[in-house]
Picture (cartoon, one colour):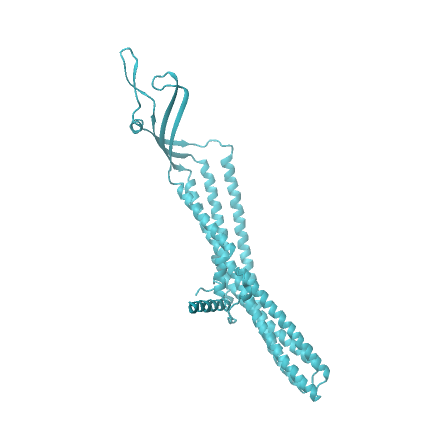
Length: 455
């Protein structure tokens, strides 16, 4: 028994350690966010609601069937249905029936309602995709921010290690009388500054991890971490395309434009539905009824004309004898309804014009966004190339400054300046790298390339 408890404890500890050491990939983050995001869940509910609405539209083509049954008591002064005389009595009646109605023609409104329901279902599917795309975009941005902060922490750590070794070297030079005591104090101040920059970089990393964890709705953000993926800078083939080609491709694939187009089609169907009120409607109906009474019945007459009474027939016999049916067609022709039909048509036309304006605006926004993404990507690439050139130059400059400082040909202030410029250049390379990667992903996104390639 004790051995079993020990095994269970070790298994629990092992699972707990594994959970804390889990490193989330970008694909896992995106999938988890899509599954747990509140806005996505709300869009899924909208989709389910439109599926129910489609069932309602299909149901309009089916007949309506209603059954009825009643049992009543009449107490007091009532006419005796057998003798025709007013008597104080208690009588009982039972009746039952079935009514069936069906729309044969309703101005094509049922057909247009079904078409509208199908369009609404498509629109909600597009809206769900749009929400998932937005979540993937936000998660990707937050993920890349963590990667940038991680590499920035490494740069600051390496700089701190180097300056600590430089501090030790300076202490030896001061003892040897090669450099003055003031240089040693400046180096110590530099190390202290490096510590501050490292703490700031670590805090930025923690905040970026917290931001992504909140986006994923993960409460235990302190143990949350992503895998150290090495995302290389790549030259996207989309950049070789003309911006007009990218815009045309975006108009074919972008979800927001599909949503606007579907809403425009829905508004057009609303006009057809409203116009259906101008047309006559034809309905078919059928009803079946039967009844039973619990009063005495006349079965004959005596010689003096007095009726001969007997008890009521069995209930089911009465139901069989009293069966009745009613069926036919009903035609309704609208002549004047206080301009209600006309106003509904005009109102639907206004909604259509508004949907058309919304589509035009979405198209303009898409063109502007694609053009902005194209120019931003080009600028980000140029900034990244410039940052690399600057970092290479700063590296050579720092190496030259280091050689001069070690032989006493440069003071510590100028040496620290060269070192600070190098660190800033390295950080700028990281910043422009991930900015360029993200801008490229957005441009590819508009070109129809998914942000995340499913494995």
